[in-house]
Image (cartoon, rainbow, N blue to C red; front, side):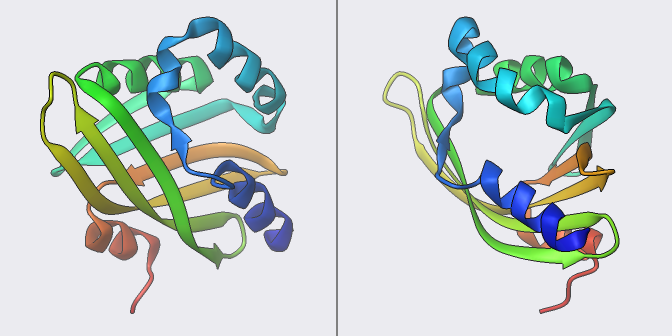
Length: 143
């Protein structure tokens, strides 16, 4: 199943997504309609930022947290680079984040790691690390 898991996670990162689109509720729901069945009812989202862990339950909780996170951003994209099969049920992705704060604010670029856990071909948990080294360590990846 692990190859299928990697392929499923890879589809999320097929192109860099502009995450500020989450503020358009109708467009977000249309996009999520295709993905919603792929999320386990017990799905959890963990954002790990500067040692703090923010946790939301369910896909709707994830969207709420992302809307809060994105409030000060004019634009924010996340792209996936390398995909690691962490058998039997986890996939890690090195990520690139690029954003610009509203009101002509600073441009931010950072690298992170997303660690996905799947159950029966469905997303069960996502741990998003904005610090690449901490994310690689959490995933058990040595470079």
